[in-house]
Length: 171
Image (cartoon, rainbow, N blue to C red):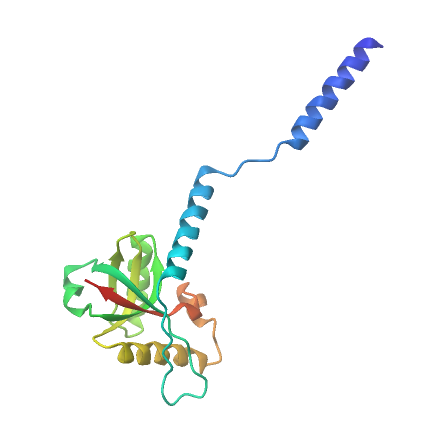
């Protein structure tokens, strides 16, 4: 009887320990979440500007962020100007190159640029003035919203439709 009690007590303790232990997050996941949080905080801290397109019924907010970026390819250096329409920000160069080739097939002159944090910015248009960049961003936005298919970019290219923004290049 004493052995049965001891075995039962041991099994109860093991069950209690097993149930009370929560699985720990992987080191990768916690580092990823911390980096994502830092990027979101940095984005919130940066100055955002709203540009309203002329002649449209519903104004579209255009986010303008300032960053130091360098072209990934030297052939793109001449095309990278002060205000750039960014369609995606990717951390893997191969993914950025893949998106670049798909967007070039749509007729865009795509430039890949990398910021100081190592993110690849996929730029579909580059201008010397903010108004031209905002107009192009809105043109792309309206091109797909007129189709009534606001999820087209996400489905086709893996790019969130509402994530088009303007990058103001710092030197």
